[in-house]
Image 1: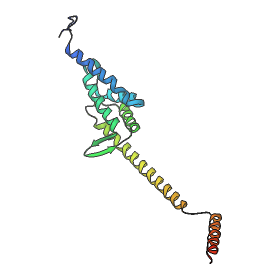
Image 2 (image 1 turned 30 degrees about the vertical axis):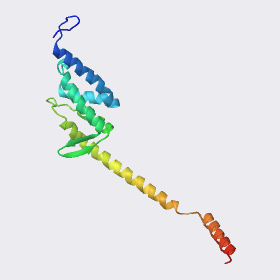
Image 3 (image 1 turned 45 degrees about the vertical axis):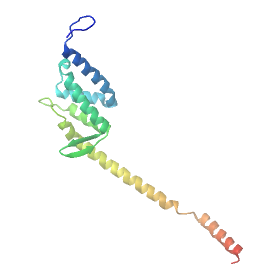
Image 4 (image 1 turned 90 degrees about the vertical axis):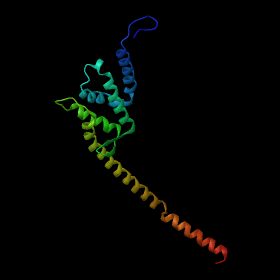
Length: 166
């Protein structure tokens, strides 16, 4: 393939690789503070040399970006919800593990995310129950009045009754 302006010969695979690199750069901010953990995790997929594996890296990053954006993943027909911090923690755990062979799917990451997701769900449930109890207590207390207010109300009612002729 030749450049239409200058006639320079361009390798189509090289151009495609550049598109993948641009996509990788655009995806990177999605991971925020967990970017280094995600990168370390993706290195477990044997992405060296990078020049030949940019498409694979882009596909893996797109899958991870989808996970970060939705906060949901499916494993063995069960759907789990997890925070970005939980995903980052799981990616760091997998990145620190030594594997004899490179990873070929996200299944090990998902296995690491399951207990984190369950812990987060339990914490959220406890927090919601605690908030509900606090709100119930506030509502119960809202109907009560102090002794001073009760005394003033009784006097006010007496005055109204006397005023009516009773």
